[in-house]
Image 1 (cartoon, rainbow, N blue to C red):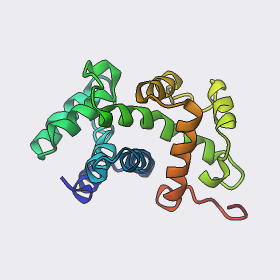
Image 2 (cartoon, helix red, strand yellow; image 1 turned 180 degrees about the vertical axis):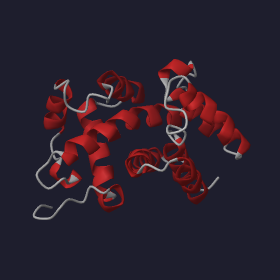
Image 3 (cartoon, rainbow, N blue to C red; image 1 turned 135 degrees about the horizontal axis):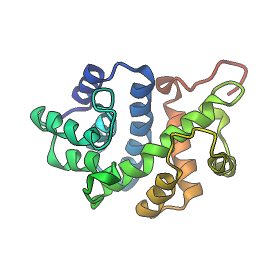
Length: 191
């Protein structure tokens, strides 16, 4: 499956602009790791774009992503990508036993959190997110972006075998490179 085909499936099932942008943010991070690890960027992009494609039609666990997996199988998405998507939901019971699965899990919640951090900056820009320490400080504020699972962010970095600050900086940079696509280029007056 190509990235373009994955984008079409995402758009077919996901009407919410914020969910589409979340998929793009996760893709930015996952694709950057694919390049770093020498992996197939297109395959990893497909997994990232499709990881929450069914969230609007199956918003409750365990329906998401379990019921969505059957749709992806019917659309010809590879088993490797489907397993990675299933494994991003810990309750699925599917182990994160591939680099793709671990990377998708590590980037999912963090990309959402970095988006939230960017949106409270004065110019609403990911370019204003410059210090992993300030991101970690925001993680301690339970009222901020309360739907983001902090334990998954920590577990994701650990499973990927990367330092949390390095992971935050890496994903921030990946998102900065795609800021316009993510709607995080800012309102002006900043970088």
